[in-house]
Length: 179
Image (tube, rainbow, N blue to C red):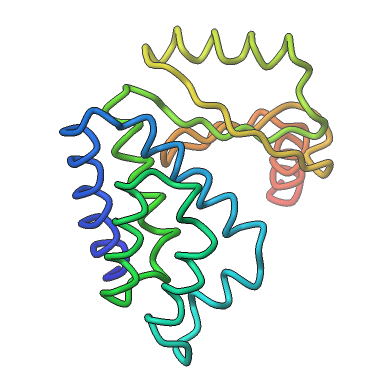
C-alpha cells in the first residue's frame, strides 16, 4: 500500500538519523510513548486523522502536549510529519520503525495466543526455548482467547503454529465430515 511505503521512508530516515546521532534507544522509547498516548486518547486520534482540521492547528495541539515529553529529534520529526500533512501516518511510521529496530537488534517478534494468561515461569521457558530455536532475541507479545480451550498458538512472521485444543477439535470434525 502507498501509506506503508511512505511510512517506511519516514521511518527509515528517522532510524538512520537516530543511528547517526547514537540515540536509537531514546528515539524508540519516544515513539513507543507516542504510540501508547495515541492508543489511549481517542480525541487525539480523531484530531490527527481529521481532514477538516488544518496541519497548523494539529501542530499547535501537539506542540503544547508533547514539547516537554519528547527528545528534540522526535519532536522535530513529528513537526515535519505534521507540516507535510502526514501526521495520520504516525501509527504506520511507528510500525515500520519498530521493524527496522528489530532487524538491527536481531529481535524476532513472536505473538502467542493462549486460553489463559501464561504464568511467569512458563513465559520465561517459552522465551528461552524460542530464542534457542530461532537463534535471536525474542520479543513475546501475548494475547488471551478463551475459545482456544487449551494449548497455544504461535505466530512468527507469516508462519502460524497452532497447538490448541480448538484446532485439534476442528481437524477431528473435518475428518468426521469427510468420512
